Length: 239
Image (cartoon, rainbow, N blue to C red):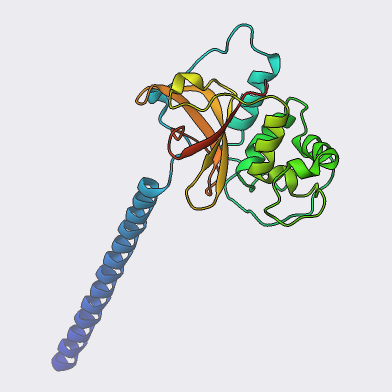
């Protein structure tokens, strides 16, 4: 009887030790997994582009007293897209006309401008299309089109450049940040055959001492210090 009791005790102790080891291993595995997840989240946060600079580095400046009432509406219309437009999709899309648009979650750089202008009741889709219908040879022909296309013409930066220039909205291109005012539109040559457009905001960036730009260069609408990041090809003041 004593021998059997001893053997039973040994088996019980062995099972308890095995259970404890499994529990410890499970705890260690869970801890390691949680640490890995936290580490990945922190790394992602460090590498993910900011939607805008930290608030302590910026200053929202008042617009000129004599500025158009539409100016603030347009600037706010561009800034409001930050956090809403989170991706970039340059594919051809069939749009309504007028006031056609792709889903707010996506778009291209020109869509930032088009959406902002519509807040001030200016529909660049309609305006560009109407101008192209009457003066098609004045516009770039790099896409091989034989006639205007209201689905895409207004979303192409060279067409917007042509339209703004034809409407007398051009401003001098300089390397002086003080020449670029809130609401101005800037176009760039990215150096890769790609054109880009953005809007000057009334948010002053203290480190560089110039206004920030609202644009979508591929990761959604953001406010960044990119005024002189690329070669400027156009400068326009609509309002």
